[in-house]
Length: 375
Image 1: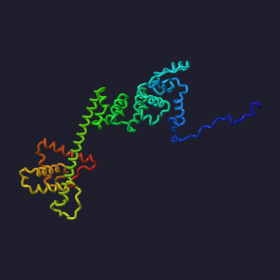
Image 2 (image 1 turned 90 degrees about the vertical axis):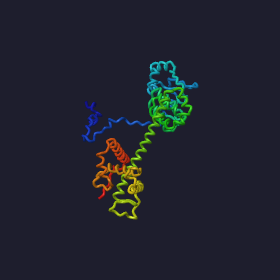
Image 3 (image 1 turned 180 degrees about the vertical axis):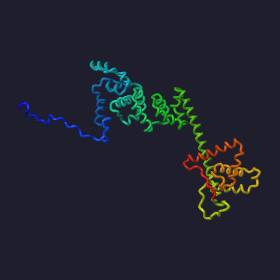
Image 4 (image 1 turned 60 degrees about the vertical axis):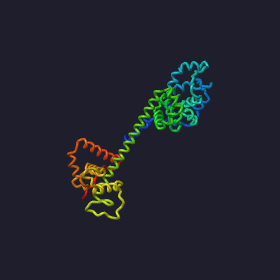
């Protein structure tokens, strides 16, 4: 019994003590996070070497001009569902035991593009200059073999590196539609609308007219629609300019009737000779119209076009004025009383005009119309 206890250390058999109690607020969520992964240069070099040396490769990929690329069925199958269905792993193992490799043909694209494509399946890397040269071919391969992340890489190369020109945009647009690359197709579509006149004379456009006449009609319709939208946009901009000018004219009118400016002012105020330049651009023109309105002999008969314009300015002011009872602009209250007897159709037109004027000013970021009143 003593021999059995020789060399026995009681402390080695004691269980580890339980952890100290921890407050609930210190609970850690690290277990819920995914493990950190770092793709080092050594790892990339390993996968590139595996591809370059073809160590124990069991697939032969035949390209144009008699080229052969050696690859591994397991890697191709894991990277692409299309390769996985093409390469039956059981048959591949049987072939590898007998010393034979499975074979795949990838033709119709440059052999260098196939090499870029297969290398990407190994290390997710590519050489920048080669990818720029064969981005379209690699885009087709990535779509054909269902590798979406490589397709996005090709799109970025074409868009970010400025590889789309007026000579190739039609071909790239058709490929983008075939390869289901919406970002690329949208960019090409806008590019064609912007430079349509130059692009419609290229060889690519002529080829598309013969091979895809329906697509040509759709683009032409888009060009017409874009032209209509541009004209409508210009029309709205010009309308807004007019409304802004009317708004400024209303403010200038209140300014003249309340404070006075340059040569015209209210009867109870004396204009200063050394006053600062007026900040209202419409003030000078309004002063000329007001002086003409005051002395025109045709005003009563309604035959003067300048006086008619002044009547319209005064009526517009009355519709924008917040308090006509104390307003210093002439005839403001009279126009408000006259409005009750106005034609309904004319009343609707005036309301639309007032709404557009106030809206145009509020959209521009300036405060809504506020008329000053005479103290």
